[in-house]
Image (cartoon, rainbow, N blue to C red; front, top):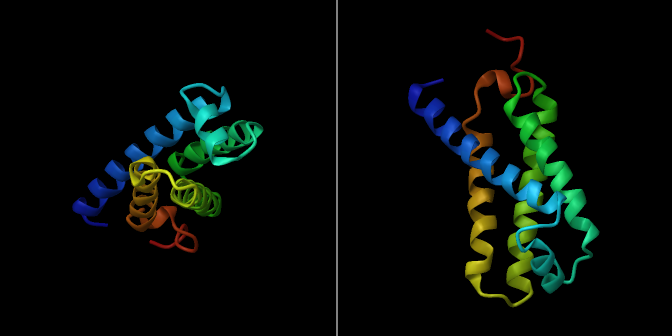
Length: 128
């Protein structure tokens, strides 16, 4: 893996981890305006606790070494959560600016996944 790709991976992963942790904690404890956002979108409030819990576990999965299959699931979960959030804002008729945070985290999810080192990919753990 080139030095450039490592830098891209760690910047994207750091931003992703920070964003998902911050959002996950706020959702888990239903603070920071998320109750209002979810209510405006028509989703039940209890969904926040579920999303927050899984986001925090997903960050742990992405950051710890090994367990490439768990990482794939975490990346998939982040992808579905962020694409779903962006789509929900747009379909609900909210201004496009409301979807931007979700789209930024979606982009960081894809970048982190794409530039991940070989040891974090399925089927490459034991290869040298």
